[in-house]
Structures are given as structure tokens and as C-alpha cells.
Image 1 (cartoon, rainbow, N blue to C red):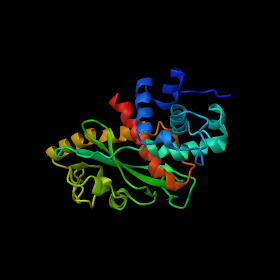
Image 2 (image 1 turned 135 degrees about the vertical axis):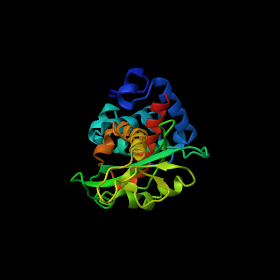
Image 3 (image 1 turned 180 degrees about the horizontal axis):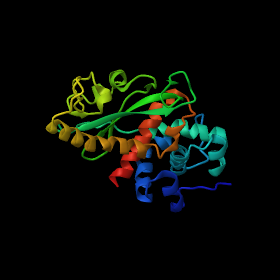
Image 4 (image 1 turned 120 degrees about the horizontal axis):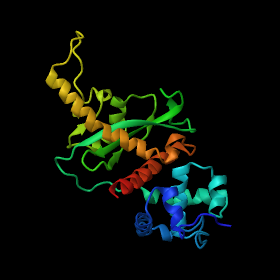
Length: 259
């Protein structure tokens, strides 16, 4: 017996954070990306859930981080079927890279630790858990996520992960702001550091640091909004799937922010 269905608009916002109209547009996008053409495991075998319910299942899983044995019965399917839905539909929700960005577009980048049970890529981190360092960049004007870095071990600092994750290449040619942890990347705009002799910064530098801090806070707010999808607080799937998952969550974040 299916408990949750996209046919009931009252289920959509609590389990996705999207308004029903936004969710319908998302389903149409997934259909355009081939979501309806994917069979359940083998050619000719139809899904027991329609496309809208499959999209809702994936979003609900990301939002709640329920186990497969919990999420499956809510949609009237087995836990193995829930696995297959997430594996096939999840990548179709990925963020579409911007084809063209304004020359004057300012991006803000920051890293966040994603605890993961798969230790093949993770490493013990400052949060005392095996984690992955995920780099996220947003547009300072729209607050939309514009780029994600490839997941890196969580014990690497941001200044190194900025380069090793490849996000530096995705943001090349545009102004980039970040906190002081990105020191060593000359193309990144970071706050002024206090003089080595311990003296205070000149007033004009202190004022610029305050403005820099105010603008940079936007990326921290974006990371907090992305982590309302609780899967990013305790990632139980294979680390190799985190790239598609983080991209999909960033896409949902953008839809919510854009209204």
C-alpha cells in the first residue's frame, strides 16, 4: 500500500521543500532528460511507480535520509526497488552547468564537510568523523549554486581542495571570494590578515574585511540550506555517488531559492 504520492500536493513541500508548481516543472525536466525511457532493471520491465512518484521518492530520501527499508514502504515498493529508483533517477536531477556567465559575476566559494560511512574517499576530519570536503560556489548576486568541486578527503584544507577538486577551473576568469583558509590561491579574494608584528589593521582594511565578511556569509547560508537535505549530514551511500547527489541537491536548492 502506497502512503506517499505526488498525486497529493500536500506531500510535496514537506518532503522536497518545493512548491507543487516547482515540483511539476522538475518532473518535466527529468522526463526531458530521459526519465520515462529508463526501465526497472531490465528492458521491458516497467516501474511500479510513475515518474512523478520516483522523483518524489528521490527528493524525499535526500530530504529525510531515511533508510531504504523505511523509504520503500512509504511509496509501496521494496527496499531494493527504492535503491534502483535512486540510482537511476538521482543523476537526472543533477545541476545543469551554466553555459555562459557574466564577466562581472562574483562567485563565493567555501567548503563543507560531509560525513560518510564509506571510508574509501573519506578521512578523519576536524568534526571527528570520516568526512569528505565538498567545495561549493554560489553567485553573490543570485545566491544560486553555480559550481561544485569533486569530493576530496576531509582532512585536506580548503586551499588545497580548491585546486584538487577542479572547482578552480570551473570558476576561472571570474572574480572569486573566499575566507582566509584559501590563502595561497592568488586569484581568490580573501580578507586582509593582521600584520605579523601583531599591530592592528588600518581602518580602511578593517572596513573592507567587514564588508567581505558580510558578502561571504551568503555561501555559509547556502551550505546551511543545502544541509536541510539531511543526506549531507550523514552520507550512507557509496562515496562514488556523492557527486551526483550533491549536484542534485544543489539543483533543488536553486529551485527553492529562485522561487
